[in-house]
Length: 392
Ligand SMILES: *[C@@H]1O[C@H](CO)[C@@H](O)[C@H](O)[C@H]1NC(C)=O
Image 1: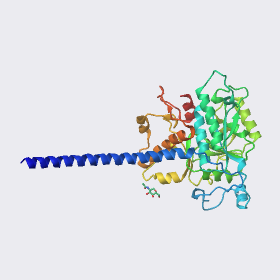
Image 2: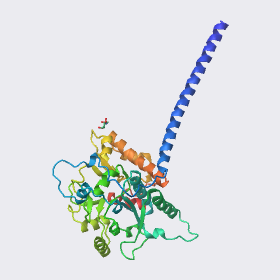
Image 3: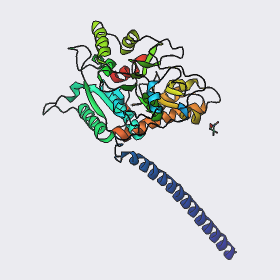
């Protein structure tokens, strides 16, 4: 009897020891897996921080034409001189082509630097230019330490040193305007970049998925005062989400005169100055896929939407959801969850874009998301996304 009891006691001891061992081992395994993952994501996070040598200025290869840019079958609607030149074996002068970001408020700076950093990371041969209010260069007095200003200076330095960005301070568009107000500055200042043959302006904040498609647009387009991304597929109006321009003093003079006569928003200023559809990027140039895509459109995704195909066919996604203050802000999970696309694949793509933005913000700017307090008035006008975000 005693022997039997002892045996069952031993059995239970062995059993519980085995169970304890198994659990410990499972815990160890899961801990190990987690740790490996953590190490990998740490490595991934650290990697892009390593300073990369700038691409050699000469000689520069023409951009790789990927499948998106395969010329569609059928006729070529416009003779494209630059393309002809390239085909004829002449080299493009990449030092006269560039991507430009215009920032008017401190809160916009990191997103602009991130976008230029993306072009750097994707090895675009074009120049990277950042325009910002000249007042930001003003030396602060000894005892006025402004944390916002010190972040701004740090980001401007990072842009130059790490991403080879050319800084261009800009003046207010109207002479004698209040240089402390973001609204005193205008996209019309792009036309002052006359040392460049063509520049592409992208409206942020957003995520660049493929620089080569834009490189091709920059390289193979004719120089025209304005080739804007159409506001709608009907091509009745221009939008300012992507502008391909040939800067000139003459265009600047006209825009400045028009803006000085009465205060208007940039979009209206440009719509008055440049008629559609003549001043829009040709359908032919846009036929390779989604050149500019707005994140809110993912909510309209229908069955069969494929996130992999979407990413492959998209060049740039502007993170714009009218109910959200912008991807720079930390919006509570439940507020975001309500807005996510219903379609599973589209939701994955949407979440991934916002998450990628958050990670890049940390890598490039060393900044966490901004604290967001829900505004008393929920109405944030869709077309005022950036300004609204700046004022929150
Ligand atoms: C999406 O498309 C890719 C490439 O064509 C394919 O491999 C994948 O299975 C598709 N995914 C879904 C969920 O249909």
